[in-house]
Length: 251
Image (cartoon, rainbow, N blue to C red; front, side):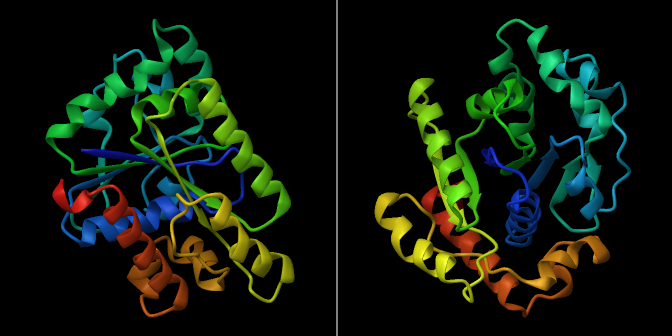
């Protein structure tokens, strides 16, 4: 099972849209795919029309007293399941802190799922927290949406610095441009120059598009209701970039 995390220290950069759309594309390609919505806002849960309810809450889940399998919900799409979030996840940092080896806890919880899924996408809340550190130990790669602005570049640098400081060199950081508006000179400039500084960047930028915002209205992945739009095509190319980089075709 390949464990990927859609993550950024900064909020509002397209993490959930990326997690939902890439998971849908993986499932459409035939991979048994699970999305775990780790954000107490529950946006991925909302997009998949799943009730935001976690029996036993985040505390029971972290302590291993809740059956993870029993909390997984089928979505409307073949091969694609969801582990929903609810507001109890706002206490995940505290619950993890009460456990031994808290940064390893998430990886331990996920291990049994490897028999049932090929791809697991973690939709992470923003910021660096104990939850984030647990994600870093559990995931093989961080998919990092980056809006071409100075603040987004700053948080990307902070993430690389944090990885160095925590000696997590095995954790892949795969940034990609998100919400790119080519009418803006700064966006065009950063899209042209940043890959020279970060050769690990994924090649496909995701454009700013009203169709992505419509995901909240349709409550569905973009490709399921606007598959011919530019943004849907970009997400599909991005998925192929990710799959090739992580050898998912060999999973």
